[in-house]
Amino acid sequence: MVNYKDLGLVNSREMFKKAMEGKYAIPAFNFNNMEQMQAIVAACVETKSPVILQVSSGARKYANQTILRYMAQGAVEYAKELGCNIPICLHLDHGDTYELCVSCIEMGFSSVMIDGSALPYDENVALTKKVVDYAHQYDVTVEGELGVLAGIEDDVVAAANVYTSPDLVEDFVKKTGVDSLAISIGTSHGANKFKPEQCTRNADGILVPPPLRFDILEEIERRIPGFPIVLHGSSSVPQDKVAIINKYGGALKDAVGIPEEQLRRAATSAVCKINIDSDGRLAMTAAVREVFATKPAEFDPRKYLGPAREALKELYKHKTVHVLGSANRVE
Ligand code: G3H
Ligand code: 13P
Ligand code: ZN
Image (cartoon, rainbow, N blue to C red; front, side, top):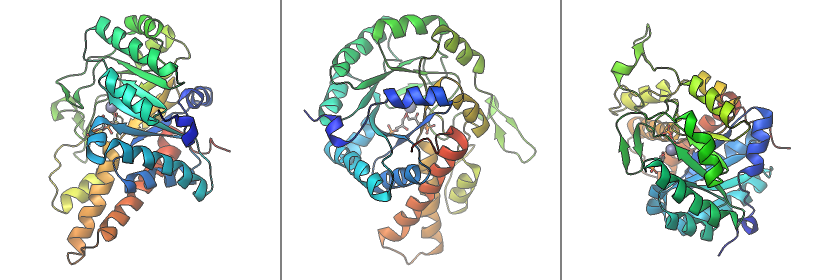
């Protein structure tokens, strides 16, 4: 059993308390490799932002769970070396079984998500409570989820959003003892969050998505005042990155995300954690494609992964400063 505290990691409790008081949200960025981890840490150190490093079960399969855990430990040391001991939480993203959550906790994760959102309500409550009972013995925080996001939640594919019912949140939080709750108010995973027919088009022909359901968020806040809320599927799908990808041979059609102003508004509410993965994928892919297209003789991976890492860092800095409001929150 590895205790996350010995690795210099923190759980999400204090982070969320400060985010709630300060009216901002903690960035939760996914990582699968060294360049992503370095970009996240460098961006958050440079902007003095706390950060949640997220590992999905897909990331565990891709990179190996032991390697990822050592990378998170390395992230703590890397931040110190860069000059700012920012709080870093290592979080399991979309944990789908009790066993996976236990395994991550034993490996040194400081926070886990148990995603029972596709289960019948009572089963979601029972599974989430079981994870909470185990995790809290080690002071590991737990995120639960109510409501289903359209798109892909790891292996679960949902055709449409099932918005979180405000009528259930108080009961869920009370019965499970979770530390935070992911809700569905219109976000979804991936780079094609809405079908074109769900959107309008602006004068430049760019898709404008339907607004998030702030009415549902406000009702949830009324039912569980001061309780930390999480938004998944919160990439904004920057159109400049999409254009670079398509210019250099990509085929991203009708890619559309959540407008940044709406995320900024959400961050000032009880939303304390905002999950962003796809935007990083777009930034990296755009940078790599550009190198491949403009320097076709290049074959040193550092010559394309380096620019990709730099583009990723700039994207994350933009997020902490201009979207989440988490910049300059660390002494
Ligand atoms: O919510 C999903 C995250 O973007 C992780 O994606 O399961 O492909 O690693 P992944
Ligand atoms: P995006 O696909 O919008 O980046 O969402 C990521 C996410 O929710 C990870 O859990
Ligand atoms: Zn998610």
